Image (cartoon, rainbow, N blue to C red; front, side, top):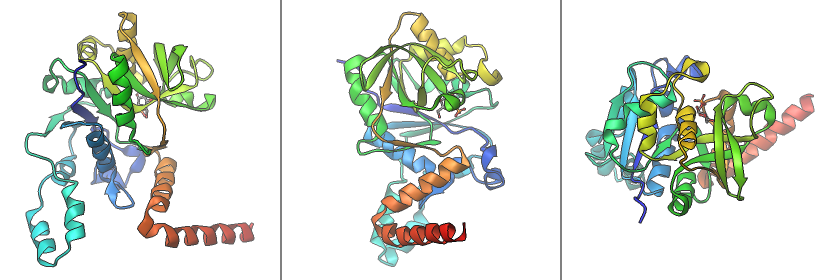
Length: 297
Ligand code: G1P
């Protein structure tokens, strides 16, 4: 029997400079799509995949994230007294059991690989997941749950994969595909942020990973790569060189790059339209807006 994936690392140490000035005083993971912060989407996805322990790799100025997952007794009492049960229920999704959540500081911004490495003492000899909250994925079966299911068959390491246009490949880790099996691909190499025209395929890594603890040992001796940062992609590529198996999983779902302004706005519109309580009013508004724009052109 394969060991179950029960721990997830959430690298949330980034400064979020693309969203300044908002991120001057709030962590970008607290920014909201409709009424839930980005981090809540990531946590819900992890829970749906069977994750029981949540490890946040934070940095200075991320205190609001810790508070977000704490109890809010005054607020809860006030809601209880005024009979606002639905809101109380909404708050419950933000509560974490004591002991289920851990925070590790990444003192210097040395890259994603380094951030994951910072959590190594909290992972023992077991597979673990990594979720990048910037990548929000709308899917019938949440992306990480799809991957856990596939991983039960394959073992090894697995990354979420998505086709991207060649001109955009340079923004991602890109897979060198050894064997295409449909929703799964076997990977023979990975390149972080390849220069234009040098990407080994158009399959990009999206921020969901299932990794073996060996990757943490590999990260111990990793030197900096693309952008002068210690890259998780490089450590996974090293796993392949060591003869271990790595798979890409073409997930079913739509991914939004909430690390960019355009992606964040697209996600806001898509999640707004997906909400039953908002859909009608929002759709009407968008329709009118488009008409007015067309008329003005
Ligand atoms: C990170 C990873 C990259 C991956 C991307 C997905 O890059 O390093 O391999 O393709 O996330 O969103 P970043 O977007 O942090 O530059």
